Image (cartoon, helix red, strand yellow):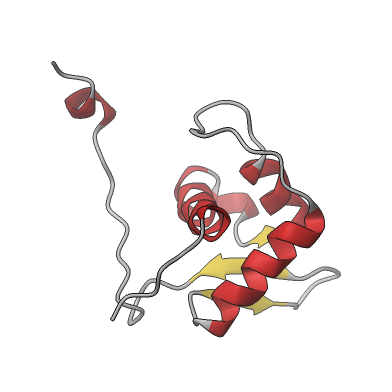
Length: 101
């Protein structure tokens, strides 16, 4: 059975998937980068304002479900999503097709 995710857990996974594709040079993301991306005002619905504590709790929950992996090879921990074998799959959508009426 697939896990039921909170709004913030869903946002964190979505941000990780998005940033892996759009800014691969900075992926995996640090906690600060993840917070900034979750709080981003553009291309987000709903717009939210989350704290470090809230994002860290979401990450911890996602790690417990093995949906997020933490790596700490540098000065700070970095986070990546794990979709292989987790039962969750991300799909790329063509925005032009979505905007057709």
